[in-house]
Image (cartoon, helix red, strand yellow):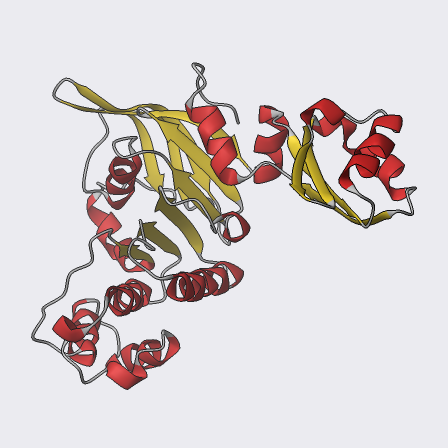
Amino acid sequence: MTLIRLHQVQKRFANVEALQALSLTLEPGEVLGLFGHNGAGKTTTMKLILGLEKPTQGIVEVFGQSPWQRHFSTLRHQIGFLPESVSFYPQLTGREVLHYFARLKKVDTRQADGLLERIGLTHAVNRKVKTYSKGMRQRLGLAQALLSQPKLLLLDEPTVGLDPIATQEFYGMVDELRDQGCGVILCSHVLPGVEKHINRAAILGQGRLRALGSLAELRAQANLPMTIRVTSALARSTLQQQLADLEMSTETMRPINGHTLEWESSPGNKMRILRRLAQQPELDDINIQEPSLESLYRHFVEQPTEVRS
C-alpha cells in the first residue's frame, strides 16, 4: 500500500504560495529525500502529511486516508516524526523522557529501554537531558520517533548540528529502518553524504517541485558533464599529449599534480572514453565522477521550468 500520496497540492498562507501543484508518493521500504532552500516548502509538506495543516487545494492521503478524518487518529501511532529543533524537558533524564513518550503512545516502557540501547544512549540514560550534546538529543529524538514501530517516519533536518561520526551513525539507523520496510521522508538542505541513503530525490524550489526521481534518473534528465581523472607515471606534458592523440578534449584538462589530469565530458561519451583509456598501459588509475546530488540540486533549482519526474 502506498504510504503517502500528494496530488496537485497547493498551500497558501495569506498572500504567500508555500506550495504549488505538488504531487509525489512514498512507498514502503523507500527513503525519499526532500530537498530545497529555506522557504522552499519542505516543512509545509511535512505539516500537511502530519495533518497539522490543511491544503488550500489538492489531495493529501496517508495510508490511503485523509489525515483529517476523525478515525485517522487510530493510525497516528504508525507515524514517527523528528522535528528540526527537537526539545525535551531539560530536568528529566533520557530514560524518563522516553518513558514519558512511551506512556503517551501507550507503548511498553521496556520497548523504550531497548531503543535507548539501540541508539547508543545506554551510558547516559540516567543523565539529565540538559547535559546532552546536540547529537545525543537528536538520537533521543529518533528513539521517540521510533516508539510504536512506525511504518512511516518523517525526519525534518535530522543531521543539523551533528558531527560527521554522529551523522554517519544516524544514517546507518535510517538504512536499517528502510531495510525493515519503513517508509522515510528525509527533509534536508544539507546534501553532502545523503546520496547513498535515499532511493529517490524530490527537489523543491519556491514551492514548486522542480525534479523527482532516482539519482540515475535525475542525472539522465540533467545531462550534466561527468569528471574524468587519470593518473600516470608519465610527466604531465607527455600524458597530455598522449590523451590528445586519443582525441580527448585536452583544452579543458586541469592538472591536479605532476602526474594527474582531469577534465569534463558529456555522459554520452563515457563508454567511448573508457574503452580508449583502458587500452593505455601507461595509465595507473582512471576515475570517473558522476554529477553529485549537490550539482543536480543546483541545476534543477536554477531551471525556470517545473517538475521533471
